[in-house]
Every structure is written in structure tokens, then in C-alpha cells.
Amino acid sequence: MSDITLEERVKASLENLRPSLQSHGGDVEFVSLSDDGVVSVRLSGACGNCPRAEMTLKMGIEYKLKEEIPEVDSVLGV
Image (cartoon, rainbow, N blue to C red; front, side):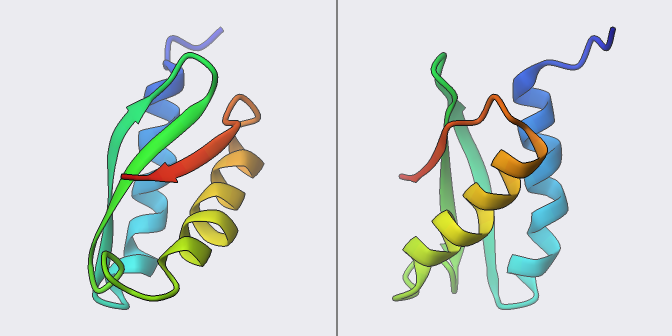
């Protein structure tokens, strides 16, 4: 069994998503992970004030995290 924590898995997955966001002038920062699987992130750069930020969160980041890490329930922007 692996010693990698759920938080470490989430952070690693976010790192894999960063190049895509950065290619559009944005970025994502891990903020927290609740006990019930809610991941809080902060979008910055072009993504921070983009009118499509909610879509990026839900259809991009949340979708990918839930696909890779079943323990993730949702992603919130803070």
C-alpha cells in the first residue's frame, strides 16, 4: 500500500493540470481539502477573473480530479 496521502494525490493531479491553465495565462493553487472530499483551489492570472472560470473549475479541474481520485467529491473556487 502506498504512503501517499489524499492531499498529495490531489496536489499532484493539480500539478498535471497547471501547464494547460498556464498556456492560457492562468494558474491554479491548492488551498485545502476537507474531510468530506471537497477540494478548494484558487484560480489566478487570466483564469482568476475569466467569465468562464466556473466552467474551468467544474468541467475541467473537478472533472479531472474526480476521474483520477474517486475520493474527491467536488472542487470549489475561493
